[in-house]
Image 1 (cartoon, one colour):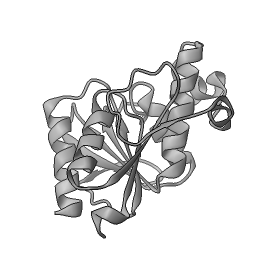
Image 2: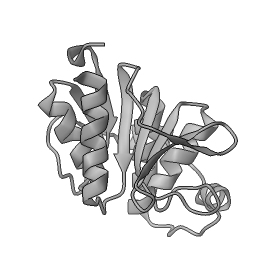
Image 3: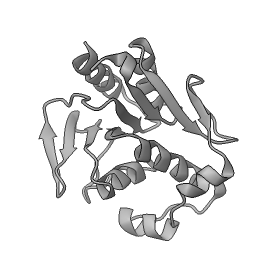
Length: 182
């Protein structure tokens, strides 16, 4: 697979999304960074500002997400837009790569967790680099399994994750791109 045939779908936020975008740009991979008016973007390349109507396509009940994720989320317009943007990232990517932390209930910490859960619901290949465990894991459909290091195999993929990117998370993203694109 050639880098010039690929598209990274992400969200332009600081942290993991910013690192995914930088790795894509370094290899000549196109980016689509879904954002919305008022979002604090860390990347400007490939910005795709979602309209109100497009955001509505990704609307999800906060009560549903809270129940699915086993935690309560703030019901604010900004947080709803963040969840709606994540919906667009996962909906467009055919493989989902996340950097964050897997919790004991098999969900991923933070708003990024919604992206991982949505990928599960869509039955898309899902890989998470758990910064605390310092390891890649793959969702098998029922549980997380250790993975020695995924390789991007579909030209349309999603890279997202925590705003609190640690050095091992940055290295994991760089190594993912190196394995996948040389």
